[in-house]
Length: 286
Image (cartoon, rainbow, N blue to C red; front, side, top):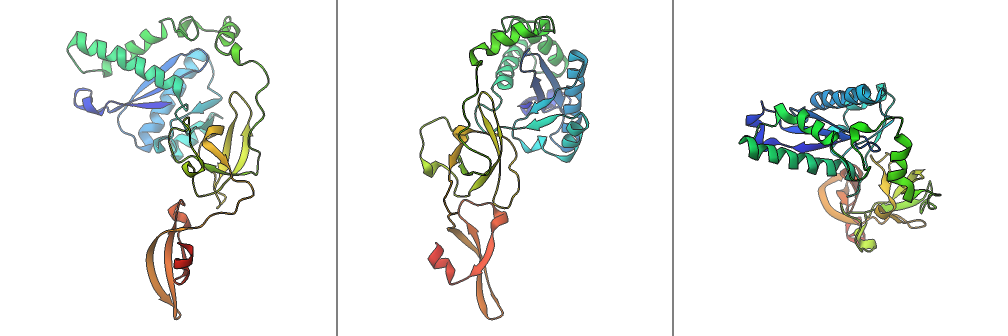
């Protein structure tokens, strides 16, 4: 699932600022919902709407849901809704993360702008479902048929069209559970880079998901899970290496029981790792 920003035209669409989009990965069947605000309640209602549309069309709820990494999707109300329907949800942190739904977003915008031009208006709210239906009834190049024509009778044929080139045993995972890794500092990790492009902080692999491609979940040094799954290109092995603690800056100083102390932020680490150390150590660790 992903959000399309339509804030530029909210005054012409009853204050609605966003469109929540979702696409079923095999059939390429798309669902859309207008969203008023990105708060927890609005997002829960929008995701619920998508899930009910999915259930009405396919006769069941999805088993998995992949989200854009925006924090609006990771609130208690949305999580409770997904848990209610036994839906496993995750994000991946790379430019590949939601390529299919982002491709649909571009198609939807193209259809929308054609409508804007022909109708001399920027009112999209009343035609959103018509535009979505237009997409679903048009031949999709990836599956070589229309999304709304995919059903149990041709499910296997469509699957083979999409994924037959990936048949075979998945490659051996590059990382193992318990292995220390660093993660990419950059949104795009599919360019040449070196170790300096990765975080100072060390993380630990908690689970390996075999597939095309393999993905991983990790936790930080405080044993807190990091939201989302990571591709191999986003990770760098740090096995056998000690954490590198260097001071980014001194935040505060104080004297406690006659001992001078400094509150420091560690380079490459989240603020939750800020800590008090003897003031004399700030020079040796910088």
